[in-house]
Image 1 (tube, rainbow, N blue to C red):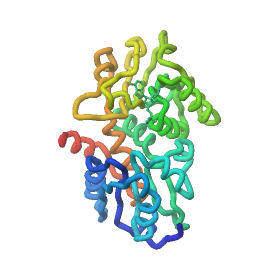
Image 2 (image 1 turned 90 degrees about the horizontal axis):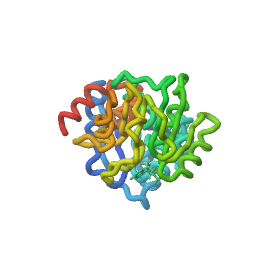
Image 3 (image 1 turned 180 degrees about the vertical axis):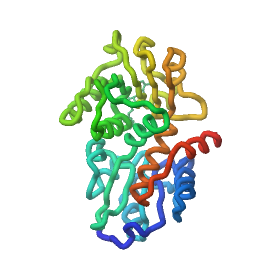
Image 4 (image 1 turned 90 degrees about the vertical axis):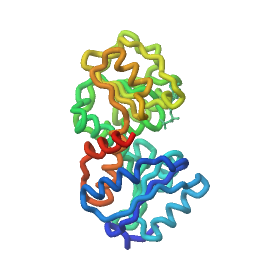
Amino acid sequence: MVNDQNFGTSTRYAVIGSPIAHSKSPLIHSLFAEQTKQNLTYEAIEVLEADFESFVNAFFESGGGGLNVTVPHKERAFAMAEVTTPRATLARAVNTLSLNKAGQLEGDNTDGAGLLNDLHLNHKVSIESKRLLILGAGGATRGVLSAIADLANKPAAITVANRTVAKATALASDFAPRLAIFAVGYDELHDQQFDVIINGTSASLGGELPPLLPSLIAPNCCCYDMMYAAEPTLFLKWAKANGAAQAIDGLGMLVGQAALAFTRWRGVAPTTNEVILALRQGF
Ligand code: ATR
């Protein structure tokens, strides 16, 4: 795709997915625009799988500035992008599309860095030299690991536990050139303690919780759920009930990934804490 006329000058943005009606992204980006005094529009648009590529082409050909991509299109966006950032390449998924100066469709993945920024900036939690456990071995976990691969100061050890152990093992071998990852089943976690536990499973969507022993929680442990809801998720309830020092939901990750996309498109970095607060008050 060659169309560099809109690089840096367009004011039209959107998030595409299906379903999309309840997306908070338009509100988040309008709060960022207000905060940074940027003039732009940002809509949520329902795009079905069959229409994905044609929609993206038409959006940029008509002068669109950038797209966020959500379920179920992140892998298709990765396949479609002509250029991808190292973290998107590692994640094999793209949540942010724009045209680069050469007019090529460029894909980034800001999900994992959004989570790490939320932990670091808003909760003062560092994963450097910590024992990190990530639950789940799907796309959400890949996103976080690809952001960790970019860090200069890595965790002391990274363990990925998954119900289907083969999926965790495959993930560990994909990341092996960049990160050392222990891939295990939940039953292999006894006798171990972790300083940071991130839930990247979709278990809470079905009102379920992976089989976790309370002894996993080290003193001062921080538990982070990539999901969020008006009520604490089952995982966060488990964390609190078993003595975790912090139990954090994924709202800050949602705002954090949006902030990085906004910065990429507009060249201005919004702050996230007041936007997270505004969204929480709206719950
Ligand atoms: P995403 O892209 O959101 O990560 P995904 O690729 O479908 O979604 O991955 C979902 C993850 O949640 C998987 O790791 C899945 O475990 P399996 O690979 O064993 O299926 C995990 N998951 C979903 N429901 C779960 C449950 N009830 N208990 C434990 N893990 C669960």
